[in-house]
Length: 132
Image (tube, rainbow, N blue to C red):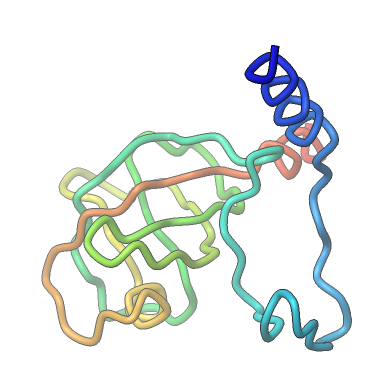
């Protein structure tokens, strides 16, 4: 009986979750300092998959070019080695070859110098729906 009550309480907590929007730069002592970056939301993010990407030196910004993307969409990437995430623009890969990641995105992941990086890639479903 106790395990059933625990399961119901846990399920109720999960179903009652709503995404939390970040405030105007304030700090909540219970949550820590507010940051610009956020983890992919389980409500709006969908995993595309993992990819091996090569660092590109141009142009500026935070982006990832992939062969499986057919138009620019907002997304997130997570470095498999460190677990750090950042928001990026997912772009179609121009031509053939390995996926490309911008220097700005690498730096946001805490990677100073790298030729290749393995990242998990998520896209924002809400942004895709809004564009349609």
